[in-house]
Amino acid sequence: MLNVTHLRGSRHAIGVAHGQCHAAQIQRSIEVYDRLFQDFVGLDWAAARQEARRFIPAIERGFPAILDELEGIAEGADLQRDDILTLNCRSEISLTQASGGCSAFSLYQQGRQWLAQNWDWRLDQLDNVVVLHIEGDDAPPLVSVGEAGMLAKIGLNAHGLGVCLNAIRSQTCGDGLPIHVALRKLLESDGFTSAQRIVAEDRVASPAHFLVASAAGQAAGFEVQPGPPGVLEARDGRVTHTNHLYAAAATACVADFPKPDSHVRLRRLDELLDPPPKASVNALFDVLSDHHNAPMSICKHTDIDLPEAERMETLFSVVMALDERTLHLRHGYPCKTRQTLSIALEEKRPPDQDGGRDTLAQDRKLQQQQQGEAP
Image (tube, rainbow, N blue to C red; front, side, top):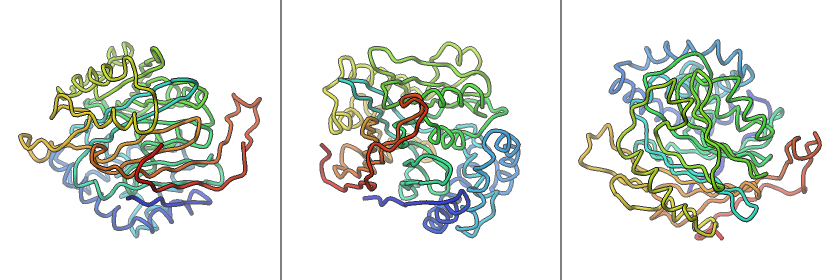
């Protein structure tokens, strides 16, 4: 069972605490990505650091405050800022050549908005997964599940905004925020409208899919890239996505080269959700545990027929109940890992739902439940 790392205070203080708490995992992540960069794009770590520096101007324009946190993580882990910057630009540096096989969906049912995802990646990152509960001085409280040393990945905030990620294999890389920097900015937004504005105006350096939903029942998929994003509106209360582009606007601008299993998994997601099951935490974990079409299944296990560098498996699964501001996490295969870590945030209403006011619905502490079965 993973533990939750609580980070509070200024950007720099949050970063220092992150680096101190996860120094060993950050170092292991650097070793993993050093090997990955050499295997897929022929860059050693020094060359990758040099490549990462070219994204600093975009970060300075689009999210300058986060540079203090990058500095803090480096300080806490006894590394240099460029090491942490390189981790957070790993998708851009590798051109997502080694993209995983993530499957994600949103579901609106009986007045409740859900988000769910499997994160499929290299087994050598399993023990470098971290859960961060961040309470910054200048941003809403948020929870992010991702890799040690990275600013964010998959999560939700106290406004009830949730974000999932699907990697896209593409040679496209241009001007914009690195994917993981953009994910953190999204998780700090105060509502769905703000999130839409971020993906439309800030742009993202390399292609990815951000599945964004709110407690108010809004949901859409954004196939981001250096140009205008492709938008996938919810149909019958659902958005589904794997690892290929299919919004018209994005596919007209970007060439992707997905692995064959991406289309197979998307078809299976659509089958399982049409009609959808009666939504509950366990029912949605069951969707993420599906093995139909294995080894091209939603729940991904090691395929020994693939070269070792291309083997991907499900490292964690997340189900988010946005109306409850609660994230439920299973570390490892969801089909085998029955223990669920559940983290609830204090409710904070976004301005567009509360007449421009940010108010706490109730004064309660962070609730963290470690249980064998979620309700």
